[in-house]
Length: 222
Image 1 (cartoon, rainbow, N blue to C red):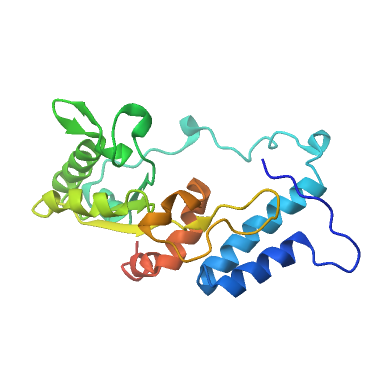
Image 2 (cartoon, rainbow, N blue to C red):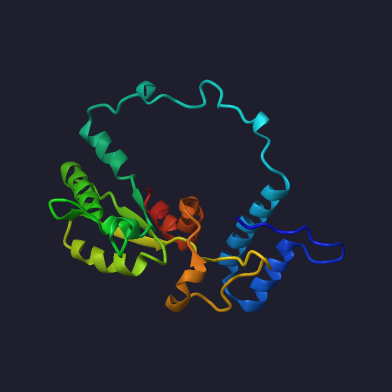
């Protein structure tokens, strides 16, 4: 947990200090820097104004729909084909399996009959495509920890009945607790990997948008 002191009058705020440090070091590109600063400011703001849990309530009736009340899809092959042609399956693939004895992506861990999590996912999507004669793509959100190995792994699926796309979640610098400045002093590379972090699953929306893949999928009427 990072704890910052309130800045003295006339001095730069913690947020401004961070912004200046990022600009001076050119650690991040413009879009990455904007995303990181948004997250950093949100964190600093939450420390100043903690959430008042007294005003937090469950959603009102009707806002959350019970799955049992959702109308089932008619047994119409043409309609199913039409709906599935708009479907994209996205899997989060940024985590390492080190705690489970795997040095690579967690999805590469073998779980059954020499098949990995990713093998089973590919089988499921491939079966769906074959059963309904559709082309549902599989999209993997990698991190800088898993991207290179994942690209190597998915080559074995080139002749399978599915298309696989990948994009990377953001890569942000760790912050020095005492000074509130970025830990790395140069752009990301493999030798300084321990000074950087992927910001988590919540980054999926922004990372997908920034990758350009979302626009491509929309153009395909997905």
